[in-house]
Image (cartoon, rainbow, N blue to C red; front, side, top):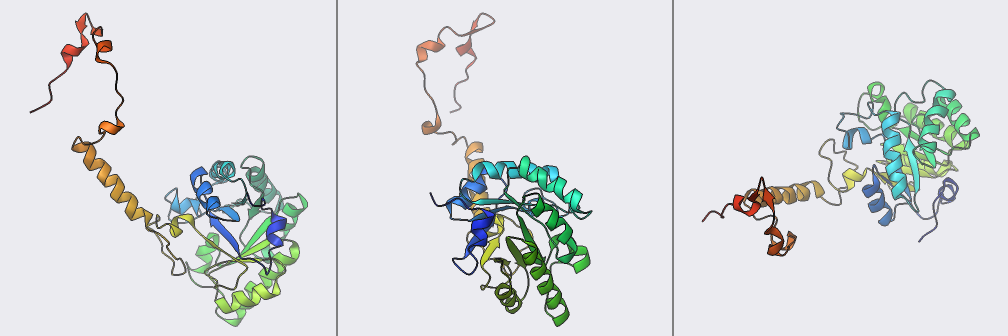
Amino acid sequence: MKQRQTARSVSARKGGEKIVMLTAYDYPSARMAEDAGADILLVGDSLAMVVLGHPDTLSVTVEEMVHHCKAVSRGAQRALVVGDLPFLSYEAGPTQALESAGRLVKEGGVRAVKLEGGREVLPQVDALLAAGIPVMGHVGLTPQRLARLGGFRVQGRDAATAQAILDDAVALSRAGCFAVVLECVPAALARVITAVLEAPTIGIGAGPQCDGQVLVFHDVLGIHEGIRPSFVKRYAELGATGREALTAYAAEVRQGRFPGPEQVFSMEEQHLEGLTVDGRPARSYLREPAA
């Protein structure tokens, strides 16, 4: 087994071997992602969309995040499990952030948390780090702020917004974040930020020159049928394959072909002889198969 990953070991990967991060939401996805070589398992608030069926990430609660963090933590033996702080679970200030993050750590079993935002969340970051909770930052496209950003769109394409994203990333790194996610920003900007920051960058729609990459589990496997960002590469189409398998199962049930002989347990017929219902032999109730 490879070395168990920690916030410290991930941070030390800056400029070295690329960091592999995948989302995971339950025990099976955690086992699959870790077996595939993921260094970090993010229990993302994307849970709201790809697992719980919400149209965006805003509806997921701390309680729901704790539930799924527990399952992922049980499945992770080597990877670092990071829990996303959901919308309105930290924005009110350091006290709220500590309460929410504390639940993900103590009840959910995660070993780090992620929160969206830049300089405006530095008080929360400071409080979490002071309490011994490692923090991953997240700048660029921040899905919890879609209403303000105007939807899923590339951020930082002009000088002013690029400078703001750079300033936010630098502030998070200097505050002590062990890694910073760069979402949906031009590759050229991500390259500059990666060069400037002491903390490793994890890209998603930010080009190949980040220190690592993250994608959503359901997007990689082609399970999620909702939004398909152009920066996502689908490595399989398990949604279509799964539907074909389930359709075949339903057809075999209706046709009486499942279960077949190989799925059936046998017993000696003599043990059925004495079975009765209201004094009547139970076997007398049997109907002959239709011709």
